Amino acid sequence: MRAICELLAVKAYANLRTEVSCYYLNYLWWVIEPVLTMSTFYLVFGVFLNKGTEHFVAFLLTGLVPWQWFANAINQASGSILNGRELMLQVYIPKFFFPFEVILRGTFKHLFVLILLLFFLVFYPTPVAVTWVALPVLMLIQFLFIVSIGTLCAAFVPFVPDLKFIVSTILQLAMYASGIFYNIDSVILPKHRTIIYMNPMAGLIKNYREVLMYAHWPDWQYLGYLTLAGLVLLMISVTVLFKLDHVYPRLGQK
Image (cartoon, rainbow, N blue to C red; front, side, top):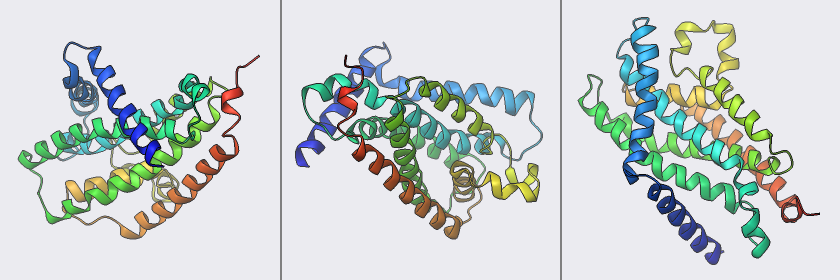
């Protein structure tokens, strides 16, 4: 276990260094890329289609920042076992290692963007309150879902590589059903809100806003349900990987 943890740390660090070495601006791209994306969405939804949402910039950013962490990590994790085939042919590595390493890298980069968001909110006309201490809880629950969903996607993509495109499409659709650009409680009819909040990111984004923008404590009961669902999904994902552990190295062999 210690050797796997050391390999995880070394590989994550090496991949981060390799990733930034391809660009002239190096580590700055970890911030520039999400800022450019958020600026584009702000122009579209905040300037051209703004319907008068109060503090819309903060509203948009507190939705986009968690969503980008979620979507980017799952997109990249979905192909991680397939991309790690050469390494697994050389040495035995538990297959959970591959999606988890990718997710760790994405999380590390996300922390820089999150710090910028918090710095922005300190100077934005929204309250800085004690409720901010609940932020790590929300992040841990989101990390649980990222790991469980990312691992489950990674488990099946090696069998049908085209599933990567389906995962990307589903994430694109889910983005518009997560309340990033609109207030679910104001736009969605009450009878449909329960269905919307079955999407874990919709509920998490709402609670991010409650904590960071409105100085309200999150819905602890809802978060408890999400945690339980995430743990169950994680158990399913790990079980699938365990059952298929020795199958992946043989895929593609003639």
